[in-house]
Length: 192
Image (cartoon, rainbow, N blue to C red; front, side):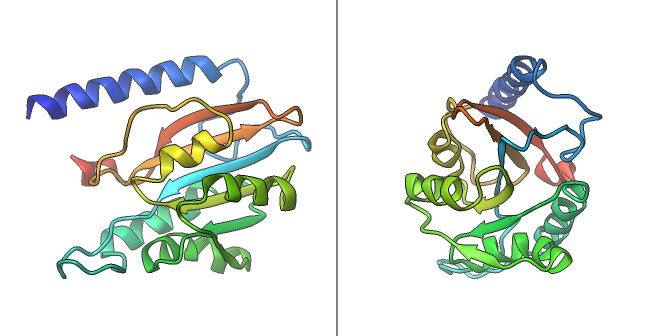
């Protein structure tokens, strides 16, 4: 119990520091799509898949729960003002179904990537979608390496198996310099 309190305090402190560090480069009302975007910037939103069904032990490819489907829809609504150009998921139901509401609404295809090839995904995005906005769905153990692959510092050590709410926004400038904004989305009361 004490560990969870300390962990939450550390995460909150990191979020505050990340917000202060990027405050000079972002504007807007706090919604994901409200910031002005330069045509020379590539924006990558990185999210963990939404809540997965754990009712069948050792299921390697569980689907989303009702809460997970609700969170996937909340992500769609959060990014409604953002022009999304491409969606990337791993080859699992939970990542695909997290981005499916966005794909359906925008008429976009879900591109599959190798969940362990972070540099390969970065190279693919920077070659095929440079200057565009992309959403990538990953897993609790892949989100931190994914954002690091785009050139930002690790925001924290790891994401707990119970944490589904992080939204990482990586903005890569024309010169390759990257900035990270970490936020939370969805019904946070489900995480308490």
